[in-house]
Amino acid sequence: MAARSEAPGSAPAGDKAGGSRRHAGNGNKKLKYISLAILVVQNASLILSIRYVRTLPGDRFLSTTAVVLAEVLKVLTCLLLILVQKRGSVREFVGLLYDAIVVQYMDTLKLAVPSLIYTLQNNLQYVAISNLPAATFQVTYQLKILTTAVFSVLMLRKSLSRLQWVSLVLLFTGVAIVQVEQEGGRKETSVVSGGQNYGMGLVAVVVSCLSSGFAGVYFEKILKGSSASVWLRNVQLGIFGTALGLLGLWWKDGQAVAERGFLFGYTPLVWGVIFNQAFGGLLVAVVVKYADNILKGFATSFSIVVSTVTSVYLFGFHVDLLFTLGAGLVIGAVYMYSLPRAPAAPSAAAVSASDSSAALLASSSSSSSSSSSLAHVRNHVADDGDLETDPFLPKYLGKEKGC
Image 1 (tube, rainbow, N blue to C red):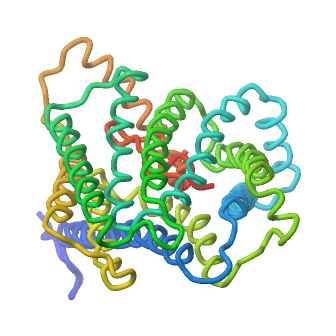
Image 2: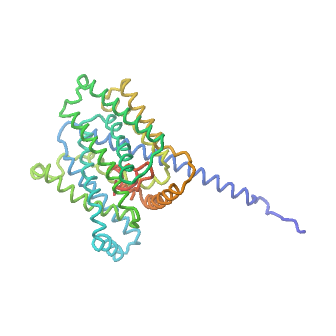
Image 3: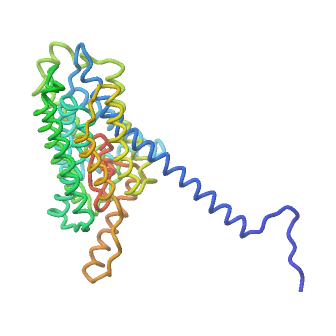
């Protein structure tokens, strides 16, 4: 029998395979940490930057114009990405858009409802952040998890684990404690001074959470079985979003725009906010596929901490025991809600539901890979228990609107 010989200095095949796996594992671990950092920065920076530019002295820009510009930038970016996917073929590019938007016009019209809600939501968030401390908004806005869960149970007949129901109760309790603390300290801190109205901000964020929950679930429902790409869906959303945004601009600020101009009050910081809103969500869409639900939940929780600490130094925000308790409950609830379910014994009904869910998640994962649109799809068809649709992200990322 001939003896097996190996070239001097060569490593056994098994060692090479093991080294490749370790290298791939380390690479994935690094990507997860990078994804975490990007998610935290995106979640915290947009809210803080909007709060900062809306509270600066001097001429204040019109938020309705910012919403329109963000939508236009998202649409243009998605169109460019589609053109790149078609390898620069203008003929294929135009043919795809004509077929998807004009020929299949009924499919396009289905997106008018979520687009209307997203446009309303974007405008409401400017109102809320302009009137609420950034940390308070960040904590209160997590109610979108509660509204999304409720709408998913009612509209999609989804079931939640006992741990998720407990986390939702803790979430509501934490937000309530923060509001009690803010109400009690309003007179001392003069929150309503400088043209700010706490009550208006609170109503705006609550309505925004309700609209976010409904839009995310509705979007998931109409996208089941859809084969359209995330970027194409975002173009369809953006067409309606831009038109509805212009309508809202005309109704609310038409006279002001006619007198002062569309870009009145714009500064480099304002442009930074708009680009953050338009492209930040798309960036998240690119990295979100490396982040599981636990990582996304941790990122949301950590962004609350970042927003609170930054608000203390940037806006003089006062953190007391009640706020710490309420925010702590919200942070814990967000993390608990993102934990995976305990395995259960499969039943015939469960297997059927699992197959349907798997098909949806496969479609969602495919969309998220291409994107996070939010409009993951926004760009997302949300994961089970992670349906939140953030207007600041690509419009169907399943979780967390964008292009």
